[in-house]
Length: 593
Image 1 (cartoon, rainbow, N blue to C red):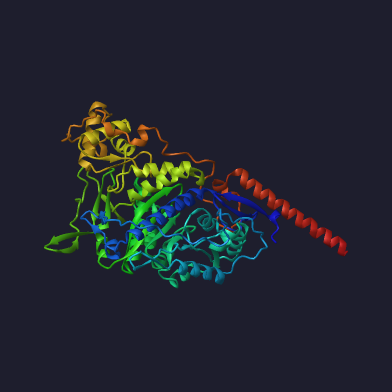
Image 2 (cartoon, helix red, strand yellow):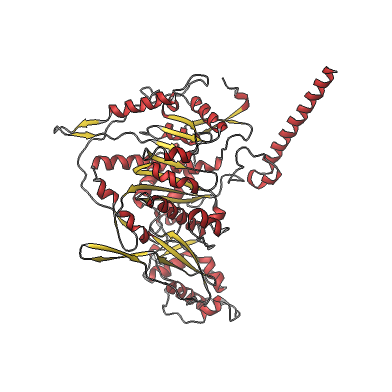
């Protein structure tokens, strides 16, 4: 039995893990937002999966949704027959009340063979059912989940204990200390965890390649870039399954090292105010590229930028015909070096002729050599995913689920605020503008967000916020309209004379074509803003961010990550241990003498 004095118990949700006092296995408290959001998505996925199964949607119509010219997917509507949902098999170790905790650490857990056998028996028991008219209908099996990089196993344990209707959860890691910690934590969480979670020492890439189309959900949450895992991950997901993917190398994705981003993701980033949303779209484009190699394609249901990372949730389908629509969903980005104007260049287009569709390269260029507003040159980035990055129906379902199970989410305030903001985003508008940047270009005072929103709405266009940046504004208004509104604002709020070669001077030298109306519009505030619902919350504590990689020695250079108090505590503990070891050595030498 393990000595509990060497460990501290960490509880998150319904799971508890034993963490060694040394930095042996990676654990980051800040990722509670990530884990809570993943559980919310997983619950919605299980619900949607059951609805699709009961509706008996033909695979072909589900795999190949109709894609319009602008890359938006149009879902296929079908009548849903009345069918009773199948009963899930009860997991091993659960009593009638669903309880199964309290197993001792030294009590043997089910072996992998026993767990697989149990899963097979459960699946066979629910393999078929009668419809009443003599026909046999396949019953839906519980979804299998693969956590490719498990570390302590906290995520896998939370999935198994908190998500109703989940099947087997396979936790992998390539580090023996992490696998030992994961197995210890599985036993510590009782019979329910033992019956549902299994831990293996394996390279995630090799494991996923050798288990093609076996998992309904694959979760990738690496320390750094997920690029090396994407090719095998898209092959391991079943048709219609879910891939959850995190990227924490934000410096690379946001343009700090563009050449590195291109080598890892196949896209060149730009350093605009929208760089964090561009990071999301670069990751989605990369996953789509890997999926296309196997005649597969992705449908994003949720894409979020939280804290210091981006996280995407996509469903993966197989269809050689639907895969042809990929160029319609990708675009290059032209960013002016003088002002905040940006333009998207779609890679492909379609022409409908009779009953057939022709796929052709996109028209271009969408911009001249010099910016028409300020006369400066353009930087070009991409390609990025320019189709919607959220499914608003999923977001609404998740938000309702999170609110109905408030006590089940330790990070409820943060994820409910995030989902609320996402539910109000314009789904078909890639990237966003920064009102403060527009004003900085013109060297003018900034109008309030309500006034600017009203001017855009009064001009006949749509506008919304974005979850990525509290100052960001998404709008389908062209840049001509945006700059005309700002010219009208400057006429009412004059600015000091600037040098003639400044971008702002060139923009203001032109007379506005559109006369902006700054009267307050009814829709200038979103529903959440009108109700004063919190949308952007501060970090719950200091040094809320990435932590030191497992196994690395903590030194004074990590003060920005852990805080001065934590660093001093670790260093003092190391000094005490070192002096204690020296005293023991001196005593041993004295005894020998």
